Length: 315
Length: 294
Image 1 (cartoon, chains in turn yellow, purple):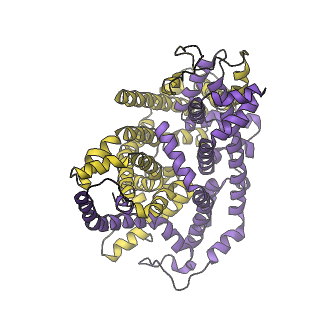
Image 2: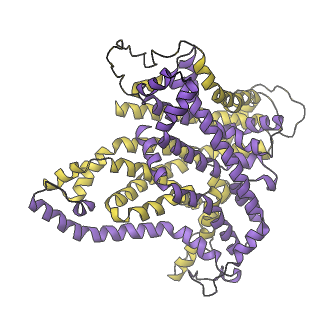
Image 3: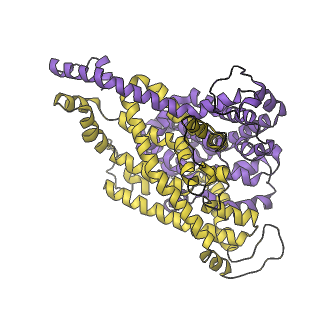
């Protein structure tokens, strides 16, 4: 229903009755009322079993002392919620997730824009540029972290080894509370920026060439054309990429877990890792579920706020 | 602007063309240099992984780091492949990823078609429910999902890895929008020949949807292949691990044989790099389609 506003305008074929706005569904469809449901059913089965049911059951767990180790189960009321909401470590991990997001979103939007602008102008290198900027995106996370952990190695790695050649003592990278998060953000940008980059590139290449030609004839220089034509026309794409990147960054877990295990001294432990630690290491299903719910509410609120901002901009 | 000189821009006046040509020669040298350097810089991690992997183990930790070694060897690859687990993990990934991709395509196409072409009771709120699912981050459901898998006896199985990954509401949304845009006239001929809805889907809608199906298929494949958290949780047996999980967890136990670790990374990167090179065009247009329309 919601998406119908963006569907193409109903065509008016001769002889067909004029359509009301609700009437995108074919008026000539078979009169069965249940056919469509049969098509939807397989998806719904997966959806109910693996998404909705765990979500509902998870909510139930939050009121019990259920443990992954088994044992008798009892109702504990709001204890888990109380414990989570007053848990300093949960707020720390929420902050780490937020800090990662604050650092990574602007970087990964601007970097993608810059790389796409380069590619859009250096057309003759296009194939090579697309390959090197996008290829990291298809790497499994563990491959990325193996390579970057090796490069970041403070005493044997490529970075500090190269710096040492110039007489510079390199930082501790992943092993210092001060630099660990930045290091993770840099590696993440290298790994994931390719998707945003392709979105930008596609948007740039859909701008008609004659717009640029006309501007050039009017005497606009290359920088002016980028500033006055390309960037304004990309506003919608930028909004979309920012929303997607924000939601993606808030869900960060895997690369940080594999690079630092959340350390040093929990400086990079994200919420999802804390949920994992509580559930699968601490075995406290109820407690972990209440944290998961707190986080889910925050994420959904952030997503809805984003979409509202985004659609208002478009309107 | 660079290509505009190589293609004849028809109605440009002579002075304008002159102006543009001069800017190309001055500006493009710098532009191409910056672009080439950026691309090379971007390849450094992959090149360094490869450079390390072909060194004899004794040379990997020599400082300052050298890019080339006179004693290049594939010894590390032989060691890694000889142990066999990386091949096993690749097979596991191939099996689970194939299940996820095939099921996702079938289930999401059917649902999108149902929502796009039929009116039935509850259609509105069911669709809203599906779309609402996009907002739920699957990572927060790992605990109850794991409990469910324990109850179903699917821990440490391919189905346990694959099934929860099939739920992809966003693809239902994207496919439905694509189907909505296909004019209904195309189906009329088939319907007049007495084709049922399933045959219409198969013989009319799907052939027209090849680009979007390819894109959804490729992205499901990449996503499932690279998924880490869920397989990491539902699999404990090293024999059943997928490639990312195996590389991420078991590998640490081999200690600091850096040539071997990097050889594993290169081997782990290869399958999807090959897929990317084969399907580069589809991936680019797929992102473009999802981005511009979505």
